[in-house]
Length: 427
Ligand code: GLU
Image 1 (tube, rainbow, N blue to C red):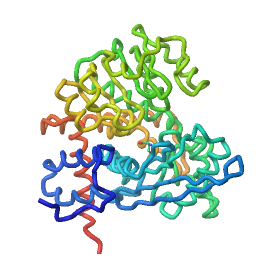
Image 2 (image 1 turned 135 degrees about the vertical axis):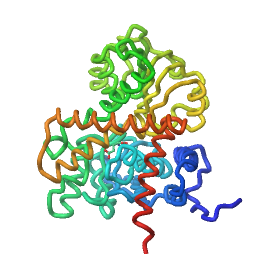
Image 3 (image 1 turned 180 degrees about the vertical axis):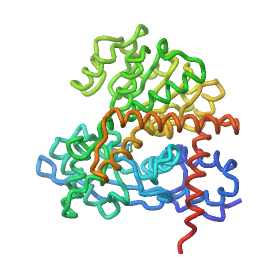
Image 4 (image 1 turned 45 degrees about the vertical axis):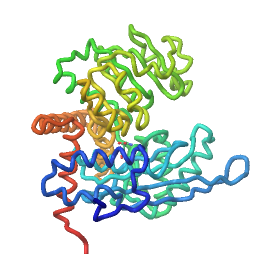
């Protein structure tokens, strides 16, 4: 039967891309929402989409034009919040999905935020530092009409770091004539950033990993871990697992796949990556064909790179006990089913990687109050939020006999849709 509320053409999930995955996830949760499900159409449409042209002067004197996006998916529970990524494959549909996952994530861990995401379709590795600064500043000016400390607060994401956040903060501040530290999070500590923010996502992954391991009787101290993506998320998570006694047996990034059954020296690899920009050329492990990565036996698999990495092509080859989603949307819905059939516990992105936005929230609160916390306080509070969130999803999953992902969506969607219901429809 045709829907009573046909979607605008750009919202159709006509491909198996991230937006299609998100819509499937929403359809899966709908039966568990009771009367609140009458508001569910709201979640299938982003509230606001801004597409901007980002023209900049290139170092060679030519003018480059780049495509930028900022999507605010939902703001029922508070200001929009979510990162900005720089990647050559960024598309509107991807940013839409990422913004929706931010709404779910923020609600799942009970941050007082809605969800947003932004991106620029560039390969930042091909840009000089000056070009990166210009593209960041022009993009920020173009989206300045919809961002602000109480409106929409961008943050770092794939290929955007503290320096990019500092440029965004400065550009916004120059335009309004005052220093607005709370407009972005993930800033340098010297500029109102928070201690512990850089490590927060990896730390959160480690915390939920320990909780999950305990529930299935896995000893972290003897666990074999494999990691895809060795940046701010995968690299830090790997280090924390190794510090707890685990072995990282394989790592894959955009440059290579490396394997060492007796355990890779993660500290040496982190140094190599910070000097070389990738894991390729690391002498402390053997290099494998990329596709072999998925068949490596492990206890914990952490996809911490991009979307749709675990899909129908490789899911049935995965031999692990727990998948902890460091990336956003790394598992397609069909692959999710395969993992579940194979008794693999999946800790979904919207819980697993929520440590980043949780400490972003702490940063924002510190900026507003101009009162800064110690790193220890931040880590303690982060651990508390992650453990509480994990305990809630675990309980809901058992109550309804559903996956942890569906449980997280039940909790999050109920919170968002309850806010929609209480606010009512304007006008
Ligand atoms: N980019 C991170 C994420 O995907 C952090 C977002 C934020 O701190 O606002 O969760």
